[in-house]
Length: 167
Image (cartoon, rainbow, N blue to C red; front, side, top):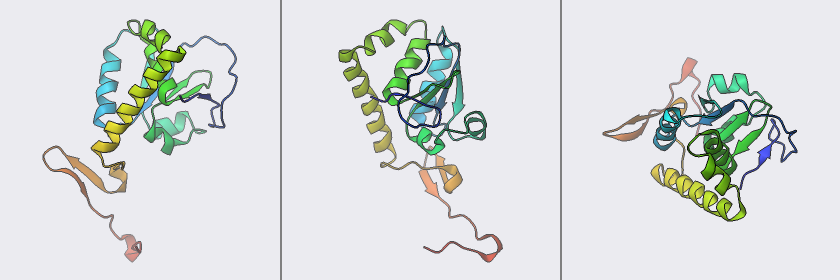
């Protein structure tokens, strides 16, 4: 299970007990599963407000300069207002905890037996996501585009000023 880490991602840390009044969820805006879950989250009654920000975006980089933004595209990351950083399974549990109707489930998933179930669900979602894209993450910034009828296509970046990358 992923743990709470320091803002720079330098391992686990004892975070002082402070009330959690807001959470920022960084999600992959180019992943259909991630955007489906984002849409579901915004429709849920929230006990703790969730701000949903595309991972790796300019906004995410501006708000959280100490994060490894490439890693936030691979695994759900949630940032608390006091600098707590939750990744993977721990992130899902804290997001569920923020939702009025899901808080009891979050408490069950935070027990040792519940943690095994939560980790299994997180791994299943990651496996589905990886299988969907052949284990690769396709990014528009890298020259990939998606058309629902044709799937992913790649267009090599142009050679600006006659300087082409060599392969």
